[in-house]
Amino acid sequence: MTVHARGRVRRWGTRAVVAAAVVGLASVGLPGAAQAGGPGNWTQLSKNAASGGYPKMVNIDQPTLLRLGDGLQVVWRGENTTSSDSYRTAIVSTSGATTTPETTILTWATLNDAPALASIGGTRWLGFGGLYNDDANHPYSQGQGYYLTSSDGVNWTLGDGTLSSSGAYATSGLDIVDDGGQPLWVSNQWGTADGSAAQGIGFRIGVDPRVPIPGDEPDEFIGLPGCCAYAAAAARDTVTGQVFGGWYSNADVTRGVYVAQVAPSAGDPVLAPFSRASGTNSLDPGQRLAMVARNGGGVYVVYRVGYPSTSYLALWKVGTTRVLRVPGSRNAEFPSVSTGPGGRLWVSWVDRTGTDTVKAVRTNTSATRFGAVVGLRGPRLTDPIWHQVGDGAAGPLDVVVTASRGQAINVYHSQLRPGLTVTVKPVKVPKRKSFVVSVTDAGSAVAGAKVKVFGKTFTTNAKGLVGLSVPFSAKKGANPITVTKSGYAGAKASVRVI
Image 1 (cartoon, helix red, strand yellow):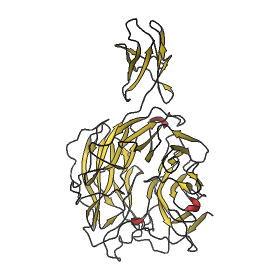
Image 2 (cartoon, rainbow, N blue to C red):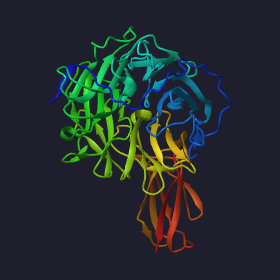
Image 3 (cartoon, helix red, strand yellow):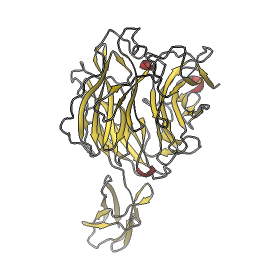
Image 4 (cartoon, rainbow, N blue to C red):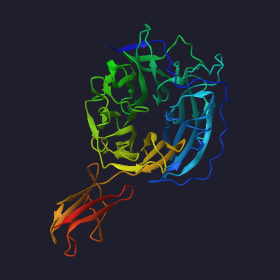
C-alpha cells in the first residue's frame, strides 16, 4: 500500500533535552592561516577533546558538504555540554588547504545530528532541526525544520521562517534541495491521514513565514506500511526539474531503498533494484542515502546490495532499470555519491576489510562505465571511521570522514585523484619482441601519460597507447611499469619477459 497524505507526524527521538542551554547564533571570527592538505594527506578539521569530554561528537553525527567556487563548506554537529549543541564549520580550498578553521555558527539546546547544506539561488543554506531551549512556548522550540543562510560561509543568519512542520530535531533523516530558486525540504516522517502506522518521507516546498507552523498543517507525505524510515535524501534533475526523495525502509513488509517523485507532483515509491536481498533482508546506508543529480541529467542513487555484508554497491539511475555494479565495493559501508566534471560521477565508501580505508571510483562522462578504484587509509591512529562523504565537483574527490582516535571523534578531510587503468598486451613477451601499453580513464584514452619501464620513460599517444620493445638487457620475469599523469593517481602494472 502506498500512502499520499497530509497526516500527523510522530517524532522519532534521538536525544533528550536536559536543560536550557546557551542559545542563538554565535559570532564568527575571521579565517585563520591556511592549513596544508591535498591528495593523500588527512587534515583534522574539528578540535574535540582528546579525553572524550566536551566538546565532543558522537558516532551518529554526519558531516554535510557544499562546494561553491574555490571553497568546500563542511558543517557538522558537536556537543558542548549535556544540554547544549553547536553546528560548526570549516572551509577547504580546491588545493585541500583549510582556509577557514573550525568555527561555531549556531548554538542551541538540541540540534539534529545530520543537517543538510544546499546552494539555493546561489546562497548557502543549512537545513536543520532543533530546539532553541526547553521552553515549550518558544517559537523555535517546537522541533520543526529551520534554516541558516550565508553569502560567504563565514557569517550565518537564522532564517525568518520554517521549512517543515515535522519533528525535525529528532528525525532519522533530512535533506534540502534547490527547487527552482526555493528550498524543498524532505525528512523521514511517520504517520498517515487516518492515523494508521506508516513510514516514509514528508516534504514541503518553500519557506513558511510562520514560526512555528501550526501543528494541524503537516507536511505532504509519501509512505509505506510498517516501521521505520531512515536516511532521507533528495535530488533535483538538472534537465527535467523533477525532484525525487529517497529513504531506507526497515519495515519487514517493505524493507529496502525507496525513491519517489515529490515535485512537481507526488508519485508512488519505487523499490531500488536489488536493494532487498531476499525475504526481508537488506542493508541500510548507515547515513544519508547516497543520492545525486548528475550534471547533464538524471538522478542517481548508490546503495548496498547483499546480506549480511555488502556483496557490491549498486549505482542506479532513477526511472530506469539501469544498475551498474561498483567495482571493488565488496564489504563497502557508508556509500556516498557526488557529481564530477563533465557529467561524471564519483562513488566513495569505507572498506572495513582489515584497516579502515576510504575507496572511490569515478565514472565516464555519461555515467555508464567506471574507471580504476583508488583508496586511502583512514587518518593515522584512528579506528573506526564512522561516516564518510565526498564531493568531486572540482575534479579530484574531496573526502570528509568522522573517525575515532582514542576517546575522541573528529572530522578529517583529504583528497583522492581519479585512477588510471593500465593494460599490457601481450603480458608475456620474449626479448626483442614488442608489446603495447594502454592507459585509459573509465574507457577513454589518456594521452600524454608517462610510462616508465626498463629504466626509460615513454609517453602515450592520442589513443592512450605506447608501443615498446623488450631490450636484450631486460631481466626475465616480471618487470614493473609505473604510469603517471597530472591530475591522476599513479598506476602500476608489469610485463613478464620470457
